[in-house]
Image (cartoon, rainbow, N blue to C red):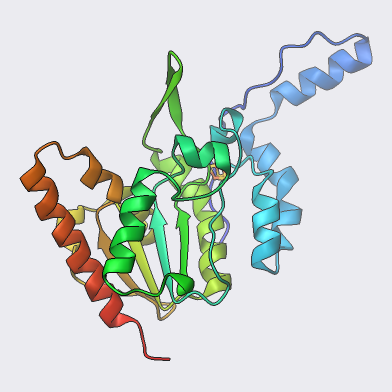
Length: 245
Ligand code: SF4
């Protein structure tokens, strides 16, 4: 269950001069720590997690990978405890990072529209991301999205697995390559997996499709309409796979 952290990668430390020799020694010790050691210090609390609420609270102080350093906050998943369907995106975007809520930006709007159009009951949907902190590069006043790397996806899988374990969704939908990589444990080509349900060991059914932000990036209107229709077709398949109450 416990995910691996990128090995030996030191985390940033504040460059504040210590006032005394003892403080100096303490700071040197702190600076010598790797992220693995820091993770070990945090692990005991994490291994005692027994509920989704505890997982959400513990994730707020997660330092499993370096992404917490520059993001505003951890953006954990949201939705009912008895959700039937879990949508897993890539990571929070700029708006989500500031608000602390997943899928509230333009991509979330596309997802909400498709969910409503295909008749999936939004009250039984949980939305989350494979990676819970926003990864970006600053460009002037803007923060440009950057795709999380394999180590970050693997580190954050710890939280995604807890969400799945506590919610126990019947259907999981991987939105995009990052979510699919986290859920399948390997790099995959979305085009080869679309439209084909995958049975998971925990009994849930996994669907893989594009991330709604991909639809927003398509410039050509006709292409965008075609891809949007295909996205909705795939959510219709998800709707059909939801077991009757
Ligand atoms: S991205 Fe995930 S693993 Fe990395 S610090 Fe944030 S919550 Fe922890």
